Amino acid sequence: MRLGRPMVVADLLATFVFALQGGATSGAAGLDVFGILVVALVAALGGGVLRDVLIGDVPPDAFRSTVYPVVAFGGGAVATLMFGLVRELPPLLLGSLDAAGLALFAVVGAAKAYDHGMKPLLAALLGTLSGVGGGVVRDLLLGQVPLVLNSQVYAVAALAGAAATVALLRLRVPRAAALGGGAVVCLVLRLLALWNSWQLPRLV
Amino acid sequence: MRLGRPMVVADLLATFVFALQGGATSGAAGLDVFGILVVALVAALGGGVLRDVLIGDVPPDAFRSTVYPVVAFGGGAVATLMFGLVRELPPLLLGSLDAAGLALFAVVGAAKAYDHGMKPLLAALLGTLSGVGGGVVRDLLLGQVPLVLNSQVYAVAALAGAAATVALLRLRVPRAAALGGGAVVCLVLRLLALWNSWQLPRLV
Amino acid sequence: MRLGRPMVVADLLATFVFALQGGATSGAAGLDVFGILVVALVAALGGGVLRDVLIGDVPPDAFRSTVYPVVAFGGGAVATLMFGLVRELPPLLLGSLDAAGLALFAVVGAAKAYDHGMKPLLAALLGTLSGVGGGVVRDLLLGQVPLVLNSQVYAVAALAGAAATVALLRLRVPRAAALGGGAVVCLVLRLLALWNSWQLPRLV
Image (cartoon, rainbow over all chains, first blue to last red; front, side, top):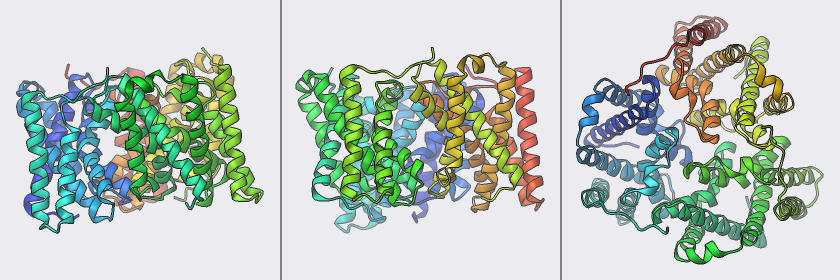
């Protein structure tokens, strides 16, 4: 998908943040340095790769240019080399950066799926998958129940943002506004949840 | 794949049952309501999605129409809203409904793979995957060794039904008979195993 | 991809060894005989299937002919029938056979990805995935953190071999030499690591 220049910068930043986080998590889980880089790569690129495989756009965007893997490697390398520092970062700071990455991946993914002719509901679900998929695979590789299935309004925020973008695109709002509007919805919802420790109800 | 009207109804019912079960399992595992809906969706649609990705028919059938995701969401929602009730259902009842879903997914999946030119052995394996794949991903997401790798003649029943359907299709038996025959093989085998607690041998 | 006769024999041998190992591991983990065969199949074919799905060459090579699944089933069956014997094999012997399989899968996978027009860095990564992917899925199915993320210079050896093959192909070295050269790099590195119990550093 063609993204404007500011979008590309934001997309690369989100990739970096997701990789940084994946690297920090896997380093803390005791993986060796190569394992850390692998998990960083998977965390940063996995959501988009899953989306592209499911809509049939292969090889996935993340594999068509060397930029995305290199940025993801960079995030993993920084997490490794500055592990002490990254671990000391305030959780709310990392969480807020992550929320920005989530918002961006979700709306860009939803727009891409919608452009590929997916029905609105499915485009919103694929946008959500783009946002949360990398983290799900990261957690599976680390032998953990994916955080996103069990945590503070995370995937719900991604779904809300993705759905908002699809709805705006259907209303023929200009593309940048649709992406921006959806991203704001996701970001605000996720930040509110993070700052207030919102939890969805459980059954047991 | 074009299915006749009764087949479509059965396919949607199977989707609903798998979603209901996925929702009940994940609710009991302590996921929040959104996580429950996600696992329900994955359990109901995952097998067919894996099959379609592997035979190269993407976007997968489950993503081409809104009906399947909506039915799967419905199953997850019922599991959530009526959690107390669903948990009280006799295991043999749920298990029998599940066996019917398994039989249907396995034979429909095998027939689809065969129609796409897969060799008979592989069509039977892909049919098995269609039947059990959703449950495998469900269990992985819940951090459990997939039940199907370790339980009473479950995947074996799916394989037997899928293989029977492929064999019947090769004998140019009418399509409905091939699907029905394979489904009966799977269903009978699975129900016998369930009622008699058959186990395959282990090595340790 | 067209492979020469000796290459095909080696590829089938590697498939057999990976299946044997997958079967032995899952038997020891307490799966029933069907689960063992499934894990053997996944361990032997999973890496190549993931690669083919990601480069968009579906159905995957492993599903186009009956030979690969049959050989993988054979490895799983031998692991089941001769479980006592396979468990007694010296770890270094199994590890060395496995290293040969890893080397072969990594260089063949890298060459295939490169032939499909993937950029060099990504072709090397996809070759690595071809080598280690089956083992990753095997470990996930068994509920374990993938060994490869956490063990003695395993994926690194695959990456080195895959990168060497891609580099040699870019230098227009004859194909057999590029594959052979990369395989030697991977094999030597992995065997040295195995015999000397090399470990990559950890952060915690």
